[in-house]
Each structure stands twice: as structure tokens, then as C-alpha cells.
Image: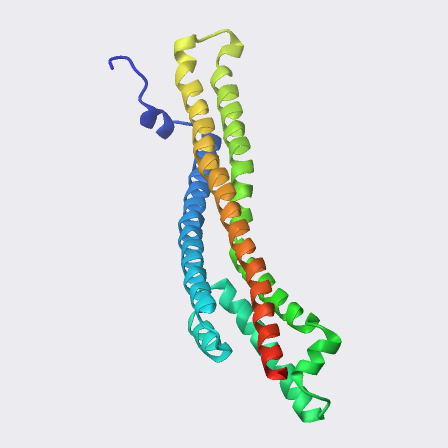
Length: 233
């Protein structure tokens, strides 16, 4: 449109501070989208791997077969919990055999499944540490970038109106400066909105996976208890 503002030209001619603010916001946005794409693929892979492993877990009654599947399925968080629990089960069994202090069924009948529960918890915590990695960065980007953009806007407006403070100039003269200042706010919001949305989205995904893992820990203990009862009988 004739006489309209050329945003790109305005940005190229903007002040040093506004340019630095815009560069910072663009870098933050690129970093945010990098995290978003990586975390989306990661959580999708974990979810699919959990579904596959849990389907095998429920269809098989052999602990050895389940352990073989868990060893091959490294993407699943529930398979990690199974491996930790299975390793602890073997350690308890080996210690009982070496010390000749009774069989494993008697041990768990007397002392309960606390050692297995702790082993499952370590797998749970390790999985959460991996899933939570860099998710909080999205929250930081989402909360900080609007204020960085606002800073650029305020600075740009102050710079634009500095020419009017001496009594010269007109609104047409300061319009480009105001436009470049407002662009900083727009870029800040463009960086913040996806970061906040995906932060909440990923948290919901992680919460759902955590519920799966909590249910799986009970299923694992039930499987061990049934296996011990069969051995005792």
C-alpha cells in the first residue's frame, strides 16, 4: 500500500537495543521449537514403547520371557522399572542362596516387598528425570520472553519520542519508531505462546505416563507374589 510502513525496512533501521532484543527473542524461539520437536518425538516413542511392553507383560506369565522383552525394549519407562525390580529380585535370591537363610518365598513373607518397591521407585525416578529434562526450560522461555519483548517496546517508544521532547517532529516522524517497538512485543508473544502451550501439553503427557508406571509397579508386585505362591505350593 502506498505510504504504508515497510516492517522489514523499519527493523533494519531500528536502534541497536531493539535489534539485540529481537535477536534474543528469535534465538529463544528457535531454542524453544528445538526442545518442542525433540520432546514431542521422545514422549511419543516412550508412550508407544510402554503400550508394546505392557501388552507383552499382560500376555505372558513367564518372568524370564518378560525380562528378555524388557531388555530389548530400552525406550519404555515401564520396562526400565521391570529391569530394576527383576535385578533386585535376583540379588535377594542370590544372597539368600549364599547365606542359606531360607528361600525367597519365606523372605518376602517375613519382610514384605519393600526392597522391590524401592527398586521400582528408582526406575520410576530415573524415567521421570529423563522425561522432565528441558521441559522446565519451556516454562522459563514462556515467562521471560514477553517481558524481554516489552522491554524492547518501551525502549523503542522512548527512543521514538525523544525527537519530540525538543518540540520538533510530528506523529508521522515517530510512527516508524513506534512500529518497530511494537514488533518487539509481538515477537516476544510469538516466542512465549508455543512454549507455554507445549509446556502444559508435555506435563499432561508425563502425568499420564506416570500413572501408567504407578499401575505397572502394582502389576509387577502382583506377578512376583503369584510366582512366589506357586513356588511355595
